[in-house]
Amino acid sequence: MSASVPIGQKPLAIDCGDLSVRAINQAIRAAMASGSFAIRLLRPAARHNLGVALPEGVELQIEGSAGYYVAGLNDGAT
Image (cartoon, rainbow, N blue to C red; front, side, top):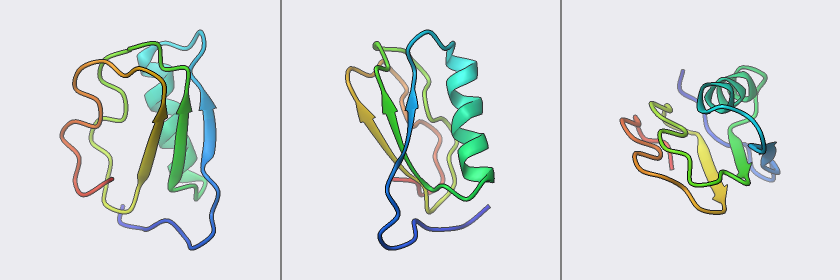
């Protein structure tokens, strides 16, 4: 999947709150599948392994403390 953030697209917010790491990563993938390539994670609570293996064109913003291996193994995402 290679796409890019459309000009002027506001980030889709995902509230990590009580979600598991797997559920957060699934929500990121679902957002991409629906055409949102600018994604903002809220309240990540220092979870590890968020946003792993994202393709080129995805812009992931993290609002709060992130754990280890955030955005690891990405293929051009920022």
